[in-house]
Length: 227
Image (cartoon, one colour):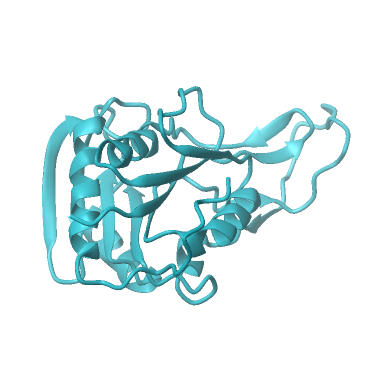
């Protein structure tokens, strides 16, 4: 298998409501950090771009911390040209508050209405906007009809593979040490049975490396990642 440069995103994002509150999700970042560790274990170079987590940074990776969806979008845009493969496993917020006051919002009425706007689509920007031509792997965290939603995402975002899992199950996915996933390709679907996330990560890295065989690298520079 060829040695490659992996760009991996992990964790949640935090979208500020005011200086002390934010919108986020249940992502622990474990899957993304396991992917980074697995890629290093296999001899690859890794840049891990991560939202806020309580996890230790895997040994041997370049690390770039971010807070919100826009910061992650900017970081991926800047670093994608240096990668052969991008695995975007972060649970990036789909929406953020339209305006964020510089002071804490005080409790007043019985209700408060937040106006939200869409965040930038990082995975959907990789091909057309960022010009990324390497191996592109996305994640689909679904609660039902998992394979169909994942296949639609694969086609819309022009991915080489989607890793899909059912986050409605408490024994896998968010905050769990184990996972069970479908690997959805343009021409087939592969099932990876329930196993520790570290083991699932090794299998995903192996599949991504296999996809890269025979595909021209997306970068033409000897420079390392710029974290």
